[in-house]
Length: 212
Image 1 (cartoon, rainbow, N blue to C red):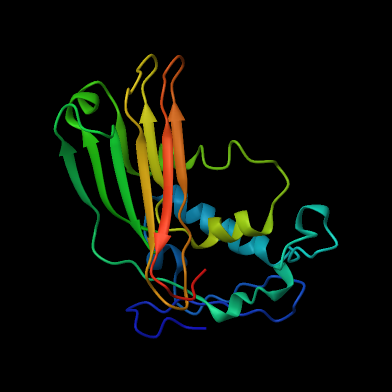
Image 2: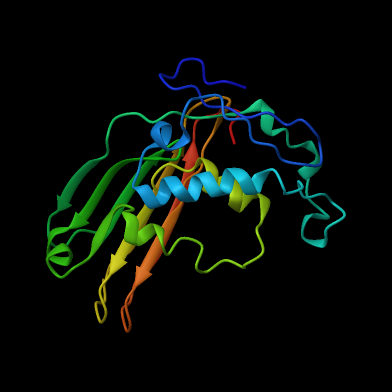
């Protein structure tokens, strides 16, 4: 399936029901999705890994009671990026320490409490240093949907909390789905320093559309 209304066409195809093959119908994956060099290299590696992975089935204990057999990845297309994210500071004493807004997997706004920002709290899209930490809390064995996210995710959201900083208000990550037939691949990395304290609240909602 192709995102024909995008300036850069993105898509995939499933040649066999039990195995993931990624078909990249554009000239350059890194150029299409952008981001730092380390992220582009991670995507390219994930694309190669996808061709070696089987789709999970209900024969696996963790998927036994799921409807994984009904999932058809070819029915969805990655959603192209929109405008660059807006960055704002929140006034001191806000109800949240930071808020990140995503639409169809893409960061559209980042807001950080001005006092906490002055103390080192960072909320933004990932740079090379943050990309190096992606997957550090995941098992070594490649998991199909994790690798699929690696291959197609735009720049992940990274929140850095300095050592010893207690935020006192939640970090809110709000993801919204709007595109019918779209596939979204959000990714969040929270890097919390020693003896820091934080509550992270992820909220996902969307329009009444068939999307992944």
